[in-house]
Structures are given as structure tokens and as C-alpha cells.
Length: 136
Image (cartoon, rainbow, N blue to C red):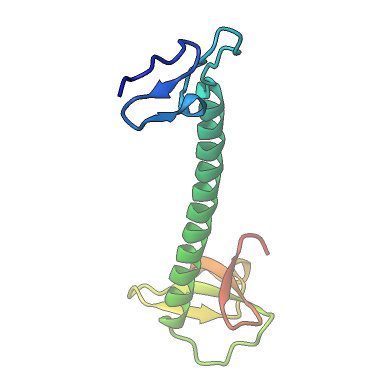
């Protein structure tokens, strides 16, 4: 049996014994359009920059929230470990002071009405957590 020669403009794979022009990554005939790969570098760079910006913004947001939560924990720990002989009322502002012996105490007396070492003023919120009050 003689092997017949295939025309040049037809792609025939002798290994698989099939026509595979549709599988080639290049044009297989003189009249076919040139196939070029799309340059996706600019798109990738834009996408990388957008993704990095989004992730960085989310990271900064989470970091700020974490720092706020840590401060709230420290304030609450400081107040709950201080001395007070009354039951604080929700919605009221109280003042934290440090005694000369180094122990903290919570008081109703405002800093402008005494000369104690004032550490801060705090508001008791509805959920029984203390929030620092910057200005009275």
C-alpha cells in the first residue's frame, strides 16, 4: 500500500492519522487570518493593582478595628479591676483615678471638682461595657 501525499494547505498529522488543522495554534492556510496571542500584561497589572489596593484597604480597616477593640478591652479591664463601692448606672459617666498607693478607683466626682490623679472618664453603655469619653 502506498502512502498518498497530502496537499500542503491541508494539515494532516501522520502520527494520529487525522486532520488537525483546527487544533493548531497558528494559521494553516494562506487565506487564514493571522492568529496572535492577546497581550494580557496590562490587564493583569491593573487587576493586581486593584486587588492589592482592595486588600490593603481591608487590612487597614481590620487593623483599626482590632486596635479599637484592644483599647476597649484594656479600658474595661482597667475599670473592672479598680475599686468602687457602688453599682454603676447604665448611661452615666464615671471617672477613673489613681491613688497615691498606685491602686485605681472609680468615682462620680468629676476631675474639675477634685485634685485626684485623673486617668480618664468613662461612659457605661447599654451592653455593660465602658467607653472612654474624650470630653465631658
